[in-house]
Amino acid sequence: MKTCKAKFYEFSKNIDVKLLKSVIYVLDAYRVHRYLDLEKYDKEIREGKLGRRFAEKWKKDIHPTLLKMAKLPFKIPGVQKLLQLRLLFKLIKSFCFTLALLFFADAVFQVFSTYSLISKHSAILAPILFLMVAVSGVSEVLTVRKISMVIDSYYKTHPKKFGLITSRLRDVVQGLIYGLSMFYKKYDTPDNDDKRIELYNIDYKGIKILKKPKLIRKYYEVLVE
Image 1: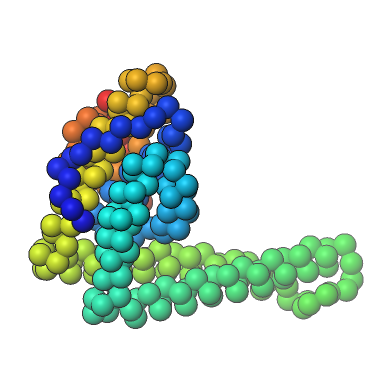
Image 2: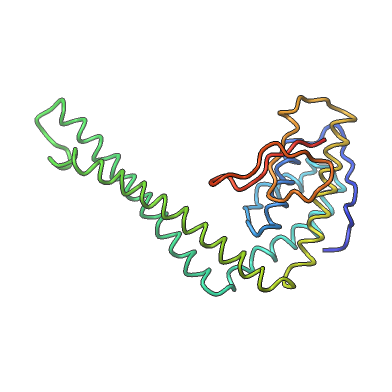
């Protein structure tokens, strides 16, 4: 990614503001190695919903860099096994949830009938399966958190891997925040709720912190000034 030094992005009146706020969030998330899906945003940006100038920058520079960043965690020791474990918990959760619904429906059916469509023990099995859904769901979340910790630890011990790229990515986000701020001043005057965005990093100018991260919510809620 070429150096941009918080380049100012100027947007026309007909851009998709919701998309712009989402892109700011996604790019900022990549700075802390939270690699979110880009497919939806890629399509809309290439269609010109944030203007042709940014579409070209995205196509030639930003998008390829993000893809490169997203591939690196697979090479970090231990991450691949954790990803497989996460997939296992996800499959167990889906399987148990489907069975739980079936046994629950059968238990309800037995209330109004002397017959059972699946098992006479459905009333017992249904809550057990719902509990397994909850346990596997929590396990999946904890595994995701563990993956994030392993990746963060790797980057802290290997600061030169993507230090320069993340720094330049910060400049892109700063430029987009400047552009969003100018857009509001030039074309729109929304209330403060509409000017809120979510960020993992707060080393940007032109923002005001409204809410700090919590135990579950890891991002800041800020106001674009």
